[in-house]
Amino acid sequence: MKPLLVLCVVCTLVVLSVSMTAEQKLKNCNDVRAAYSSKGFNVNDVPNKGVNGAPLKVCPQGYSCCTVEMEEKLSQQSHTEIKAPVSRLSTNLQSTFRQRHDHFDKFFRELLKNSELSLHNMFVRTYGMMYVQNAELFKNFFAALTRYYVSGSAAVNLDSMLADFWADLLERMFRLVNVQYEFSDAYMECVSRHTEQLQPFGDVPRKLGIQLKRVFVAARTFVRGLTLMPEVVNKVSTVSASPSCVRAAMKMLYCPYCSGQVALKPCQNYCLNVLRGCLANQADLDTEWNNFLDAMLGLAERLEGPFNFESVMDPIDVKISDAIMNMQENSMQVSQKVFQGCGQPKPSKGFRSARSIEDTGFGRFRPYSPDARPTTAAGTSLDRLTSDVKKKLKHAKKFWSTLPETVCAGERIAPGDECWNGTAKSRYESVVIGNGLANQVSNPDVDVDITKPDTVIRSQIAVLKEMTSWLKAAHSGNDITVDDSDDDASGEGESGSGCESPSCDTDRDIYFSTPPNVDKPQVKPVVVDKSSSVAVASQGSVVVALCGLALALLAPHLR
Image 1 (tube, rainbow, N blue to C red):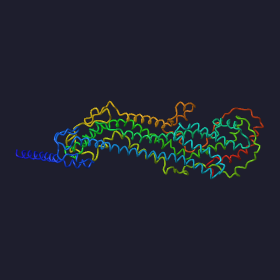
Image 2: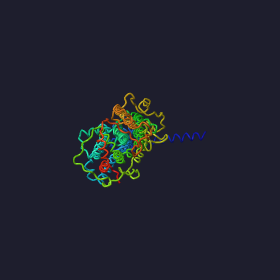
Image 3: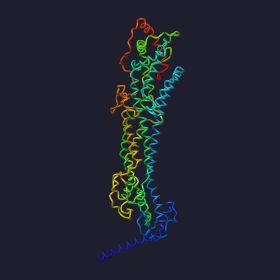
Image 4: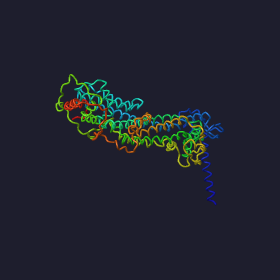
């Protein structure tokens, strides 16, 4: 019986001691004055001694070191402090993806410039003025590709641009291999109209067109997605806290001051409920945010594989050269079919026999070796860029729904029962509610009107949903700025639909070889007299000789 009595006495003394200590602190409010002053407020706002019955609006009334004026100032401070960690996390996320956007955009633009410069330098060094006089064809080609990368089909119809490029190339080569004839503008228009039927460049234009569309749509849509991310984060992070959120934050962060417990921090579950109430609308962004990130990751996989911008643009001069080689090897057949379809041209009055290929000093093309062409764009490679950005994209998933857990951690909370539960230093008993606006109907600490979702955040959800659909379209090789009906108008689903299969292996080859059996084009049949046929045959040697001249103008990989 005696030990029990002793225990009761000890407990009573402890309680009285704590009570007297707290009461002593309330009587002088010295700790509160120091803490209040450290926040930048006027220390004279704090009473020297605790006030009994202060008409406080947020914190518990009774014996307190707070006044109504202090409570208002601390409410503003709590608004700032509850927003600060969210703002910092949002700013870091914006910075991360702005940097990745700049890296990708710089890489794609430099790769375009490098491809053009490589072709230009080779032509100038090897062929001099013969190339310079015709360089605008390729200059315009790369300029159009750059505009397509920047603005898509709103600025350039890629199919039409490529068709014009190959038609112009055919016209220039056709004149060179048939320099013994005079051709009117009307005659050359006839030649251009038959480009697709003649297929003078083999299957290269079709394959290159498919690959260019895929890689450019993928590249610029991915860059557009990287642009959108910081914009969405910025707009969402500027959403103001509701008055009920500010009130709850004040109660959580600074009501301990009023009772003289300036070092007391909130319980973790208490903090979670307050933050989930304050960030309820932001959490609703999470589903569409994650869908968007999944679509970005899917397109990143395409950039590493079948839609690799680098593997198409880096050797594009070789691909054009392969097309020119096909034209060279079939120049006589092409010329004869043109003469049959467009009529026999008039002989040139000033024509003189050309030198042989050997005399011109031009040799044959050598096979393309990928190892011979290192990547130098922006000092990196597409594989390294995508590998890095994929890690960042994965890390950004569930950003909005995990904000409360991220904020309510570390030094901002107190573990166990030694924490502020909203009314006293004790265990927080309420259940932690879920994320999102709908769950806040049962939030014990923040009054949230679940019938009024934030309009800014709802608009950003719609923006993310639209961008996700564009990313998915680009994943299949489809241009987001082109009506699908336009793509199907030609009846050639392959060129309009992009890549429907996951692997896209059929067109992943980097170097195009000339098809062994190119279908002979069918043009308008005409009656050709024997003299015309003999004339074409007799000029065969001239055609062969002038192939060197064509190569001098257009082939970038002669050795």
